[in-house]
Length: 279
Image 1 (cartoon, rainbow, N blue to C red):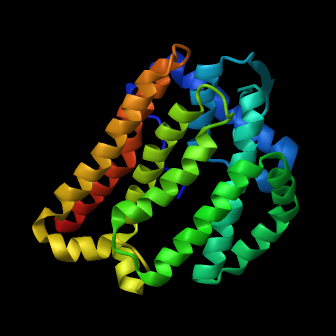
Image 2 (image 1 turned 45 degrees about the horizontal axis):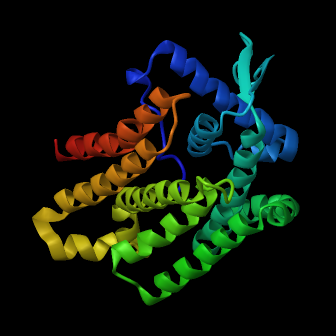
């Protein structure tokens, strides 16, 4: 489910690229400090978006540091972070843990089970610190498993589960911004589910795995691609509306880059792959 909330680097200024990268590096360092090397391997850009979003809204004081990255040792990197970075790191581990458990159940990959076992103690601590968010993810996994068993074909209903879950994660605090952040996360979550199902469609159909888009493709025929694009566009339009209602000035250009362009980079990549197959 990870990897869809990306920045479009081609459309971002060099200054904003550096700012965005510094938050990404800050998240990496936070994962390393709190969860060790096993936490670092879970790093993803989705939670970097959450850091930039919440930092732009709440404007906490950043801390920055220069460090040497093991993957890029030739020059020092800059890591930026604040109290939100710790929250995003915890959510990163929370989501990754369930993703690993789900992969083990579906594909019986022992590496996934081993990694999930290594995270179990950290998961327990996160559950105590963030019970609302943890319960939302656990509820989501249980409900999704039920829909999969029933082979639920209502794509809006199934995607809505991811929306509800991500909405609770985006809503860092139960304060004046809770409702709007939950709304933004809800539509982002639905978009992510649709993109994930769209990307895995051929693989899932081949292996007989659950994917509500399989039935939609069979029923809609030549209109399938148009319908998928319309559904995803609708979700991101609602995300953008929600974002624009928030009083965010700090890092607003980076956030708009992601919401209006970056989230489509994976979709555009998939279209290019399809065109090459046709040739």
